[in-house]
View 1 (cartoon, one colour):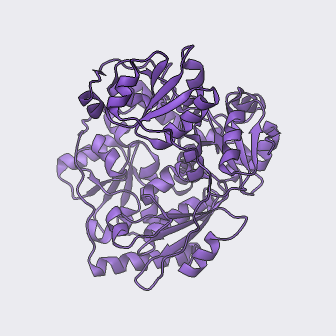
View 2 (cartoon, rainbow, N blue to C red):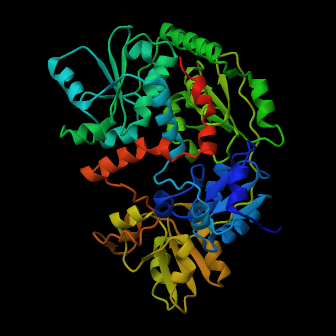
View 3 (cartoon, one colour):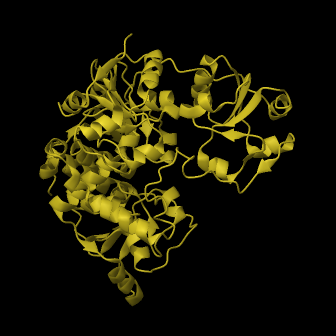
Length: 527
């Protein structure tokens, strides 16, 4: 099957035509973070096949590929065709041509979701509170409830003293338990702006009567005021609901669906939509891990409600696709559907009460590359004694920095084949990720070089005789698999924090008329 070329102008027009299309940026994270098209979804060549299958579940959806104007998109297109995708096109000249055509180039990550947050703030004008005022309230002992809208892993890295971890969606669902009245002021924070804004507006959309405030600029705004952050905190479990509190969640969900005109599905209708030809349908399970374990929903992608809104492009690769959200009471699903409808998707709500059967989701059928034969640490260690054997570490660069095997070289898939020394006859790939090993092995094997896979961790390798190297980090130039754009804003770099917040608040001004029109539903969201 021939790979088609497409001009940036034609790609831009198709992206805004209203039909389903996937615009995939196949560059590594550093280049993507420095600048990409607004609705380009990151699908790096280093993890191309497994990432694409997760992001683009329909084989015949049009896929447009962006690179840096080199041949990476052509290579990626051939790989995707081998997986079973049937309509893959390369944007001529990649991001360089895109920029020369005068189209927007956006730094950072999760940009559509963050732009949504800024547009929501401009349209709804939620109450906000600055860090100094909140600190004064705390010092005065004022009655208030303070919640961190981020997931537990992020919360554990750093938090504002007094904040309780209850992510967006979960706070709304458990509000009757977590707050318990309609008078106590509620403050919501995140690391920056988006999730605090979305969390406050979500409660407003439910008709919550409490005064609700978003903390201005989140933990970064707090740190910029010279106030301390707690690090390494273990979050408390999410609170269980009584039957009465659960009924409140159900009632609020029903009111939200009715007032906002959201689509609520039966399980049978959800199954029909999920199997409809010519449409891409995603099914997301917004319940907690414990809730899913009690009643699994096969085929659904698990994600917290706040994260699917905050980082939509990490889960959805197809513009204008159909999204079905599953939870128990319908409230977490309803809020996610409300906000992502404003991001240009067709959204639906499915509440899994006791009488509802689980929807049936068709299996995705793609031909993924096979992993190379695996070596034990002992056999891999012995193999390195032979001439022409090279150990290549293809783990993330942060893992390399934390520790790597003596004698290994680090490489990322796009540059791997060219990095091998002359005379290489066997490459041993070190990574615990079978998808990364399988992907990298393809490029090496095509060069006529044998490949093996070392999956064992550093401790197991050390027991087999390997030496482990510490304190030898890669340079910023070499570690192209990381987003370096204001990467240290949470680590005390004041200038990076200021740059990040300025970038976030400037997103709306970057939009061209076509991009702004993709958020047309914003005007319908005012409670």
